[in-house]
Length: 147
Image 1 (cartoon, rainbow, N blue to C red):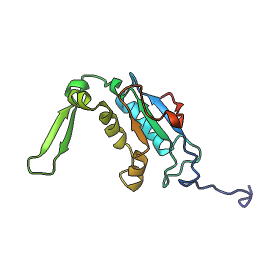
Image 2 (image 1 turned 45 degrees about the vertical axis):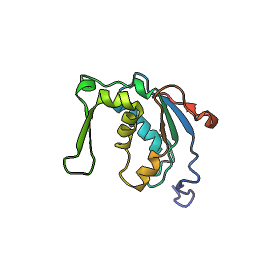
Image 3 (image 1 turned 135 degrees about the horizontal axis):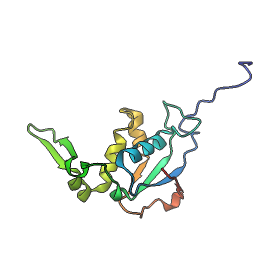
Image 4 (image 1 turned 120 degrees about the vertical axis):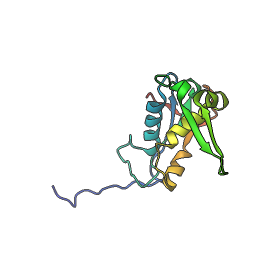
């Protein structure tokens, strides 16, 4: 094959062709749904995936309050954070966090699956999570995406 007859295309943020996707996670396991959404955010489902650029799509997640966990993790799973002060370790159970802010659980799961650098923080801003079916991104006309 003649190596000069084709060009390798490198996609950047400007010509990535981002779309808006709508993902319904009702009844889906938390980890499986979060990993699929992380792939959509990174752009790994596209042919022109570029690891060093934000080529993923915008993702709107609905029904985050109806996510499921397998086994008895709903009672035993703990979310731990630290205030930054001595003795400031705090923990909340899955049920407590679900009662306060159900979307935060899904956001935390997806954020842990993204790169831990400047690109990961930029990609994370393309995620929009809502507890119910209502969202305020109808103007972007998101396409339904089944996971």
